[in-house]
Image 1 (cartoon, rainbow, N blue to C red):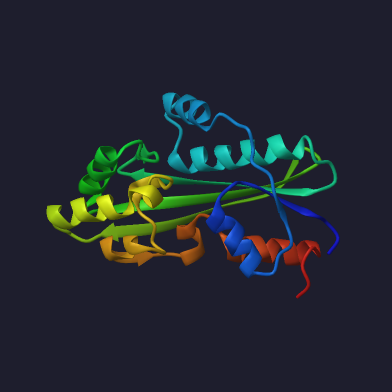
Image 2 (image 1 turned 90 degrees about the vertical axis):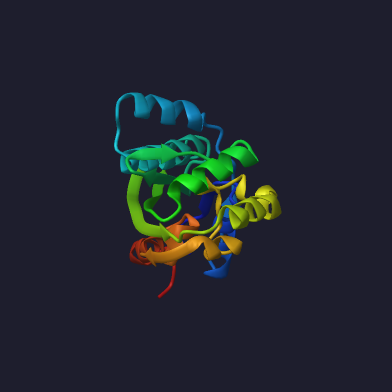
Length: 199
């Protein structure tokens, strides 16, 4: 391994994905105002894909500025529902409202990853998946949110596909890792090409 890797994220699932792939890294929580960046871009009517990319880049750049010589991976995930960007729910009521709106419909998850070194961008990718929710009942929706609130409060769309959230889905189209928030196949390919990982 030539370059040391920093994951600019506190996400447990992203850390687990890197560990499972046997990629040595350290985790540093980026101190960026995500909501301010998102609101500014939405005011400019930016495309959801650009919002995901900008948020990932802001995290990578921030951490890279204080960690010279290291590869810094910034990540972010945005949910695009009919052109509207949904954020993490702030209450169980908001979670129910989001899920009820998406029930029986298709939305997109956009998972962006950006790599910086010495405060300069080296690589970026935005993975896209299409998620179609089944027409679940109001009773199941209420039970689901009540059972899972402590977990889903940290996720866009108020579900985790790797947990009970899979029961909300009728169909998924795209890469599983992108659903989880990190386009691992593309990331690993870049790290191999760069010579950071053996292959």
